[in-house]
Each structure stands twice: as C-alpha cells, then as structure tokens.
Length: 210
Image 1 (cartoon, rainbow, N blue to C red):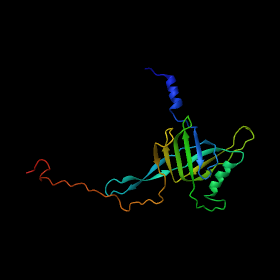
Image 2 (image 1 turned 45 degrees about the vertical axis):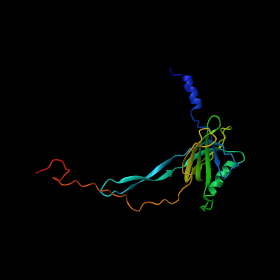
Image 3 (image 1 turned 60 degrees about the vertical axis):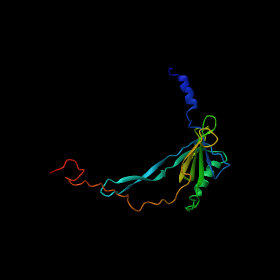
Image 4 (image 1 turned 60 degrees about the horizontal axis):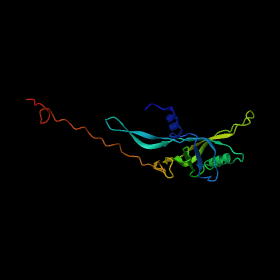
C-alpha cells in the first residue's frame, strides 16, 4: 500500500499531543482560574557523586534526583486577581520586610488535555513556591494587546500521572513526597582484590617448567 498524505494528516490531527491544551491550578486558590498562555511540564535529572575505589578507578554512582524550575505566563484579568495571587504566594515565602516565611509552599497541578478535552498527563509540583515574577509590559501603541505576566516556580519534587485520555491514571511516576534528609554512606565501596595468580610451575598454570 502506498503512502497516503491524507492518512498522515489525519493521524497528525488526532494521534499527537497539542502543546496548547493545558491548564494550571494552584491549591492555595482553588476557586481562581488562572489563564495560562504558556507553561512547562518540568523535567528532572539524576545527581551523581564520585566515590573513591582505592587503587582502582573511582566509581560514579547516582545519589539523588535534581529538579529545576518551571516557567509560566498568565493572561491578566481586569480584577487583578491573578497578579494579586502570585504576589501573595511570593509574600508567603519572603514578605516585603525580608522575613522568610515558614510555609510549605503550594501545590501546583498542570493538566495536559487531548483534543477531546480529556487528560493525557497530570503533573503535580509538591511544595512549590514563586521564585520570580516578571515585569508587566504596558504599551499605548497596541490597544488590543492583552497584558501578561511570567513567573518561575521552584518546587521540592514532582509526580506525573499518565491518563491517556481515560478517567483514571494508568501509570504514575516521580516523587509524590520529598525526603528532607538522605543518609549518605560513611564508608567507601568495598574493594575486591583481584585474585593472585599461582606461581609458575604449580598445578593449573599451564605448561610445567622443569
């Protein structure tokens, strides 16, 4: 069967996830709908450390998991609720007087939908907080432009649930919580000495020397 461009177009419309179909929710503001114009499904990386291995080559092993920040842009409403909420969440971490708050942050949920409006994946950022809020650009030159604000969220960990368009998750990944203290080994890995070869002329060493 030959290649059909129409079949390819049909699959492209239905089989691939669309970047524009998503929503962002904050647990501290369950009744406020944040109109996000752009966002990020965050990634993570494995942190390694090098351990001594005596006279042999050092060993590099995985010791932890590292997370970066997640950037979002929001459309501002005429009531100022979005911008007020973002600044309130930042004040909960560091207030205008420089006092560092003791709050545990907020939960952030990012839901990615398919073309029928059903969830594909849901990311939950645990103990998230606002790390930065951008300037809001205002311009008389473009009367139809919508004001936006960008922010960067930091978080302790995230978890991901794959829904695949169904009503319940079919798989879950990542860290649902976070371990504050991870015990590190106090000793280096055990060194296993290479077996010594028997001296020449003993049994099992090949040809015997008279």
